[in-house]
Structure formats: structure tokens, C-alpha cells
Image (cartoon, one colour):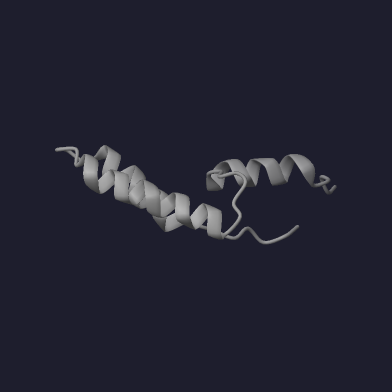
Length: 66
């Protein structure tokens, strides 16, 4: 199984935290959204997943031992 690599993870977390903040800063969140988009394009990201989801998918695909 390949080791999972976090690509653009910090940019995604920053955007999510911005959205959750109160008061909401629309301009800041738009800048963070653009930063995430730029990262995704630069890194050729096709799909994001959460760590738990990635592990679950890997477990479903890999054969069970024993």
C-alpha cells in the first residue's frame, strides 16, 4: 500500500477554519479559497478526502490477512 501524502492540506484546513470563525471575514475566506484552488491546480489534485476516509478506502481495497 502506498503511503498517503497530504497535498494542500494546510490550505484546506485554513479555509475550513476561516469559514467556521465568527465574525465571518468574507474577503479573508475568498483569499484562502483562491490559495487552495491555486494549490490544487499546481499539484494536479483530482479529489480530496479526509484521513479516516482514505484509511477506510485503503482497508476496503487491501486483502485481509488471516
